[in-house]
Length: 328
Image (tube, rainbow, N blue to C red):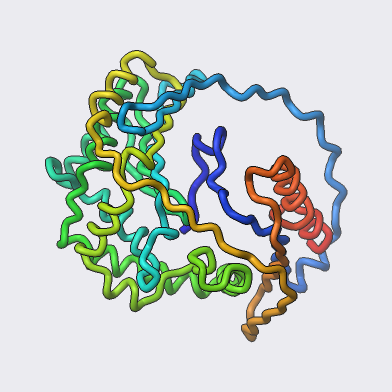
């Protein structure tokens, strides 16, 4: 359910909810404390950085497009972000959005999964999908000369997924294996309890699907989820790196212009009540422990949001934080 970082985060944050100001700490084994701590060298001055110029426009069907010419590498990144994810799943089917994202890559109404993969590989890239709580994406990186063709392929995958019944059992088995591994990690065990305390029965309080929800998911369920949540109205295409802007605009209009608007985005902000709660999950013999401390904080629209995120990372929200440095 976690999203990888990509170009869209330069311009927009997907955090449209009450954020949790969390301090994350992995406690090392006793042997780590015996090591002599060395003082790191002083940091140098920050290097100057200018956010690249970009152009954003909308197609008549409501789909937004952002073009970001940047760098010298002869590649182009295309990321189609759709405002739907685990937040939009039926309450009794957590993980349905993830299965939909994976099955979306398994062919379109005009191409088999092999043909999609081979076409992307022929352009020097691959088609990938990612599903988060609020957003999902279909992405590719190809050589610059193939930018317009990549836009056409991305549009086909996003607008005309086949959702083949034959591939669903394999994807379910993969999901069940990943679920078993993920829930055995102390960081994830802590996160599951942490989010449940903060958000309760709201979708943000659910970190993992269940075996039951994975087992009962059908292609019909996936198609219903897709039909109700994918469309131009919720979509934003980001194109970055080196490309011919004129040709890319033509390709985008030709391949995405007829996409139906679809349903409007759903707003479902959790009501987080400040509370004092302590939850301990004992796991005898574990080599590490994970501590999560959190409280409600301003959302991403707050002028203090960036400062809070930096402070959080500095104090305990990253592996390079002061707390981690002090105990290792």
